[in-house]
Length: 113
Image 1 (cartoon, rainbow, N blue to C red):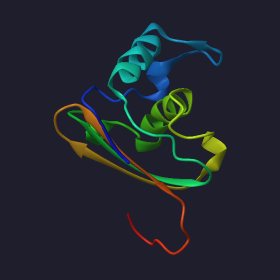
Image 2: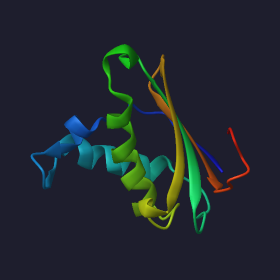
Image 3: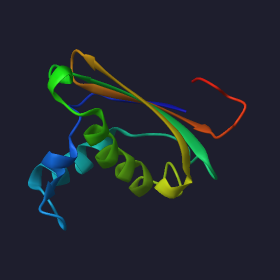
């Protein structure tokens, strides 16, 4: 299942106020993603390929982009739990704001996405 979300990727630093409270930016990000994400739940163990496009690609830590959208995938019920993610491929590119996500059933035989 391929998902395309035409909004700016949010980082972990922007998502949380301290350790426990979602920032207003993250609450808005969730709402925007809920409106845009469509797909069928992939059950069991999964592998996910993320492509993040942002004008700030060279100054953003790639791992900070993953957690907020990953939690939203669970909340949207596209995956059962982020504990079921067995493989992640993440790339970032300089460009117009958007996120592309490919979710597949996990297979040890699949070497690349």
